[in-house]
Image (cartoon, rainbow, N blue to C red):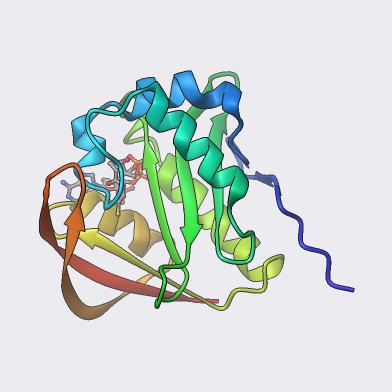
Length: 177
Ligand SMILES: CC(C)(COP(=O)(O)OP(=O)(O)OC[C@H]1O[C@@H](n2cnc3c(N)ncnc32)[C@H](O)[C@@H]1OP(=O)(O)O)[C@@H](O)C(=O)NCCC(=O)NCCS
């Protein structure tokens, strides 16, 4: 029998990646209510309030664990500092997205979280192929993806950003286990 662990925990050097719970909603709302984060994502609205965070947690809890997983990133002694999620668009391949709260950016945490999540996805979730896209005006995210082993496919898509209210050029990348 194949048993799916629906709320795995991933440990990296400084972070614990774990499933979100309703108790996280107030902190999530505080960290995510930041236009500079929202504008670099496809789906995060701006402004981002408590009800947005609660809806997000409820969505994670009801999601099909074969199609996606969402993790919050707990930094040792500091609590939640960001998030990372795998998701499968309706007619697409498994994708990954992530964010780090403003005060913790620039410390290698996104790279550490993504690298740990990819090891887990390959080893425990048996995934062999993950895609990602970053907006062309977000080179820091491109650098995170490159450091975690993604390669540029050469494809640039115009994809929506909810916070911007308009599409943005998106550089597509792929990672193979
Ligand atoms: C992008 C983001 C996740 C990076 O998080 P982080 O923890 O600061 O990332 P890391 O410290 O692991 O790595 C950032 C890398 O980008 C580099 N970088 C930062 N600004 C850059 C810029 N303007 N141009 C090029 N590289 C840049 C850093 O130097 C670092 O690379 P290095 O370690 O080789 O020096 C964070 O800024 C964020 O949450 N942004 C908003 C949401 C977002 O963009 N999500 C991803 C959507 S695709």
